[in-house]
Image (tube, rainbow, N blue to C red):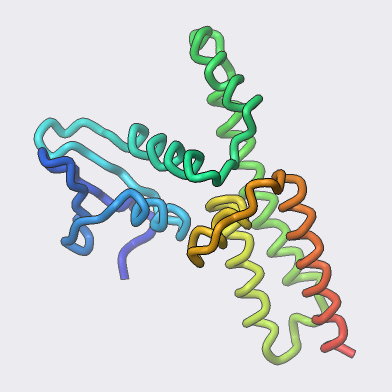
Length: 187
């Protein structure tokens, strides 16, 4: 198995095809998005010039998801990002975004650890499987914000009329139902 600590090197050929150096095969943008959702860091470089193209391709992945109706970034956030480019010399937006996502990841990790420590059901047979599902759920949320990812992966359409807060409410409801089922198993 590949080392997930080192970035997965993807080389872009002159034909614009992307080559996974780990598996020695060509990949698509969707494949790269999948690697990232699975927790891998990815580095994309131009084979001829050696230029790092990672940022360009990550932005392209985001743009494609947004254009398919998987709206994760609200319009006001997109507007603020565009505004931040006009005064980039004094902009704190990049640092703010990086710190916000880092805090988000840390809080998810802390939540998982807390569930392991506090939950008396952790000693129950089969709890590891449920815990693995919860971790996969959290991973899916960070990868593409929950419902949009599950709809895209299963091939079904996501409901465009749902706002992120409605999706989050649905996720909270499902999590509460799962916790109730686990509580009943512990009795």
